[in-house]
Image (tube, rainbow, N blue to C red; front, side):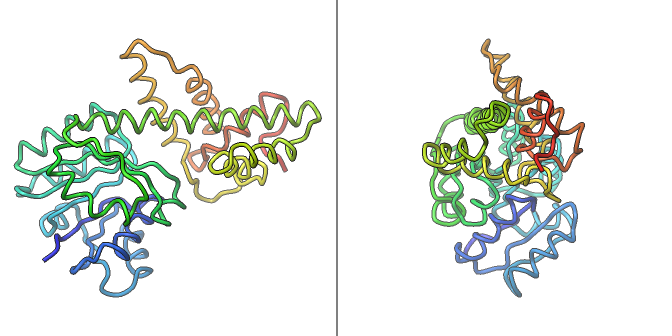
Length: 306
């Protein structure tokens, strides 16, 4: 019999990841779902069809039934609360796979607590936007004992992910360090696009031509973010794709790593300052692409481009 799975956390990324596990992982039992907002679990369960999932009322209830537990949660505190609740029960032999983006020190502390209770732990942050999660095109970073990673791998490449960075037998913290360093590239990309488009508008070059250049030279994420900026998506979304608070959390963690290592991340500092302006202007529904609006305001333009 295949392992029984529990999934904790159904944000933008989690919902797409669950969809692919249900559709591709050949489960022989319904996937257990838990989210702090229960209605989100109910809605996803209904969407995936009868018999595919089972909604549980608490983390403890789901953990008692599961062999492998996936967590995809917003920040360190929420992950710690979930793991603490899991560890109140008997977890011997269970595997906890954390796909959240948290501080490397938090990951090491949680892994130590999990292993001390007789369970296994894999740090498994993922790279990719919600659309990539929905399409099963994420890139996973897996760190921890090779045997534990072996238990987790059937649910990544070919299921939730198109690729894996295997850090078998490396410290758990290395996966999160890579995730945070990688996310600084995203912050810097959005910042540079925002500055470039504002300069193009202010000089009279026009954003249309700069966007065409981006499409030709930097297709993929650059072109997608450029389109989100110019279309006005960055201020019109009801729900953010990459929420401002999550982006700032990642920036803080990356900056703390740099400080501890005696390094600097000046570009991230600039992006974070603009994210603070986004939060002040539009609130928690602000998106990372809103950096464009903040740069516009600094240049004497309106936050909104339409």
